[in-house]
Image (cartoon, rainbow, N blue to C red):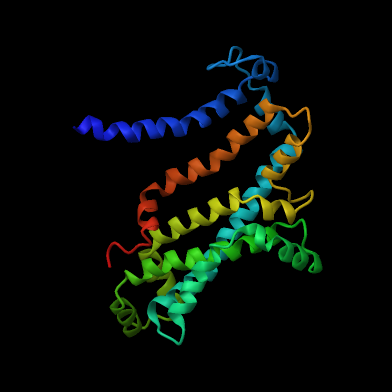
Amino acid sequence: MTRKVYVAPAVYTLLLMVPIYWLIIMSFKTNAEIGGGLTLIPEAPTLANYRVIWSDPSWYLGYVNAAIYAAMNVAIAIVVAVPAAYAFSRYRFFGDRILFFWFLSFRMIAPPILLVPFVQIFSDLDMIDTHIAVAIAHCFFNVPIAIWILEGFMSAVPRELDDIARIDGYGIGRFFFQILLPQIAPGIAATAFFCFTFSWVEFLLANALTTIDAKPIAGIMTRAGGVLSADLALLSAASVLTLVPGVVLIYFVRNHLAQGLSMGRQGN
């Protein structure tokens, strides 16, 4: 009976890994081999595709640009979300629950809906093709989910801790950095993961708000793949490299993701 229970997850995982495996082996092939027929293993494995990416600034700077604005977005989102989440967690004010719900509803808006206004706004501010423009645009989607997650973690911290800290003479800044933030560190890690992941994979806004200097790797790949003689092997290698940051992040925050997905409420 136990073996039957694990069959479905095993088959599902296998099916999920097929396109990933195919992408990886294509990155080690040549275009001639890719177009020559079906091969499950590269006949003549080569690192030439990866060498092209790491030796050509027009390629590897795409990863740098994406990492810069994603990191900026994470920093901005957490700095804004922490005090906002604390306010929703500790205080009651008129319309707080309605406002909290509407914050989350912002995250349900598809990025293409806001493409035109964002381009217009940042054009008027002369911020097109800058990392900060993309980071701020992504905050519209990431800050609400960051507030939602962190509010759950903060609500799990007893309110009595605030009173004890106040009696002991802790100011609000000292209380945040020495007591509250260490208590919700798993929530901050999970929030940073979600914000970075969205900013890293979001393509439409990032591509529309950048032209040359801040163009992300997704935009570069789209431009390269748009020509008739697309280099499939090179594009496969570039795609494999885009998976690396996500895998690394999952490894470091793997112990906090389950709690982050439950919004930190299992202790409530």
